[in-house]
Length: 508
Image (spheres, rainbow, N blue to C red):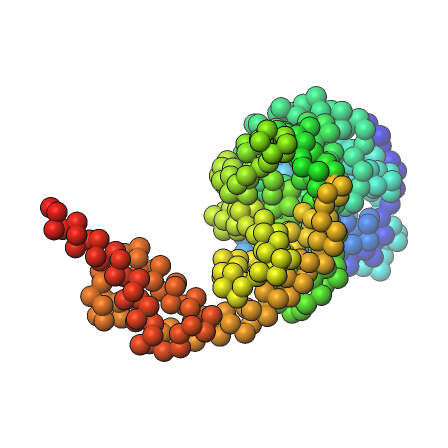
């Protein structure tokens, strides 16, 4: 135990607690008796000079009673937290106040703090004496309770476990270490890393959705690459994503300089850099690009797609003797998307997140294929329209992913200027989208399912989607402009299936 003496500025504490809340907490403290503490992340944030999002309070017992009474006093909303914890939340006047009783049988605040996850989250300030004083009275500083040396670690930028029993108490803390390292930009202390390495198998005891939540919080930061490197180095990552381990040491074609695993990591590193200044890479992206990236969820999905974009390569790896022992990964994009869906189901991702990332993985080679065609001067309007339609709202994301993928491959046989080609192709496709695709998608359709039923006597089925899609595409290309032309195309498309059906009926 590394106890550190220290104090906290009283004005910072009062600034956190508005006058109405201090008054009600003082009344509640007199009613309930016992000790009341600011504890955990709220103290960490105060010491860092940042504004805490929530107010975390600790009491020796009866946290839900405290919360219930505060909700009545303030007219706020009461929410019980957790099934097995004595904890509750009060939401009042846009403030969130969380109460929690001492955990795991702790009898004192010092014992309770030592049972927390990390030293930087194991500090407290006693509030009840402070609340009874007029704001102008008393000392300018209040004592900091710091039984594990969290303030020193905070000043040194270190993440350290509060005790050797931290991970056995809650295995999810194995990941929380890296989440706080990522969000705070801190380094993980060597002894903590070694303890994680030895106890990493405990993570299997944590609920998959809790694991996924911690991973998402890591992936939402600009430090995800460094953290995933560390998690891999000590073996923790393979407890969660063993599919990635298959890429270690797997050689790639000469356009790459890294094995499959290191290339995945490098793509994530480049994605982090690109997302910091995306307009420098896709200068023509404009407002649409920035709107696409305005969602934190979308940036998180792009980072996931970068790390997992080549998930299908180990399963599709082959060496072609008939092509001079050339290494190939045919259909790795499609296979990778299916493997990713299995991973996402295992981690209980939401359906939207699962399909959006799968869409990016499945389409990540399309910009390269189209760039090859454009380089030969053979890119048609039809191919451009099909790419825009297939990519949908993820067109900017697919090109950002392609840029990161390209930058991560620096082998001898890489195509020079590939990033410039991708940026030029994106500009061209955006022009196609604006001039050809969007006007048709926002206009009334030339043909509907009812037209196919009433005008051509067709019965609803999978063919409807193919016909209506072909009509829309032909309209985007300018090959038809009115309903009569659309019906003629539909009639021609339906003739083949209808003739075969009639022939089949004649044989029966």
